[in-house]
Length: 385
Image 1 (cartoon, rainbow, N blue to C red):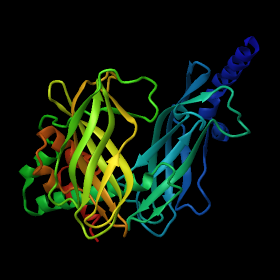
Image 2 (spheres, one colour):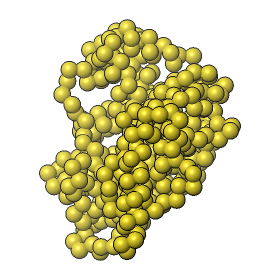
Image 3 (cartoon, helix red, strand yellow):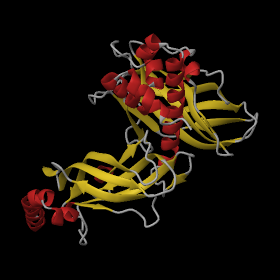
Image 4 (spheres, one colour):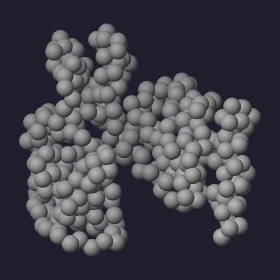
């Protein structure tokens, strides 16, 4: 045991001693970071800077790596890129040793360079073999193009998330463009939360436990309330779950396909209500399920959903609400709720605000606040074909 600890701290001493030079000298960067994309990837690395990346504190038998990297990438394809996801790994044996960076709302034309920030903390065990490689490896999980085609191994299911982000972005750009064309600047300011109090519902931490070690003691069954969107191709009929303190066990919903197309993937959104009746956006659960036209099916999660506030404290769950977040059809088409669907729903104002606040809306809001209506109008015109 003494020999093992001696070797671990010897490794730590070497890493700490070389952290400064690795961040400062270009010739040593690759000892800190490798960025490797497949030879046929639609993006290529132009340069990167480690900035103030450092080896941080000791966590048991692991070293914390505080990574602050700026990558400059080039679109080397013949299509415009709308989003991408990178995998970032210090070691792939535990969740704390790997992470990802998703960049939606891109508009990178063929041959164009664009920046990507990587700000993460990863843990790397002292006994992880180096094999001549870097402390951290960055690889590509997927790239989404403007025609919604996709490239990449998709190990993190980034095709789905990037596609939904892009569909939301298109929805929001069309909406803001109409407001500008109608001269409805008052509504535009309201939608972009300009000078208004923040109405978005706080987000919760969601942990999915497939094999919980502790048995429930005070679980009780509850009916799942349903939020209906009139234009949704899939209808939620009813749902049920059991709750115990901050855990929701075995949630399920019955669905009916109201469309004339076969559904192959569906994502359900979940809202929790605490003991005071306040609603919180809890998260999304994807399900690969085939539902033929007019048929019914059940989506059931066998695990336990455990929720906590941003501070880490558990939230006492008193009720559960579900809605259809997005649908993918067998023919490759998608459905997401329109802003009208969300506006006309029975949700309270803060939850409605949360549902319509996409990454693209946040980006456009920043342009509007910093540079005004003219800059926003110019930005929206970039996406008009």
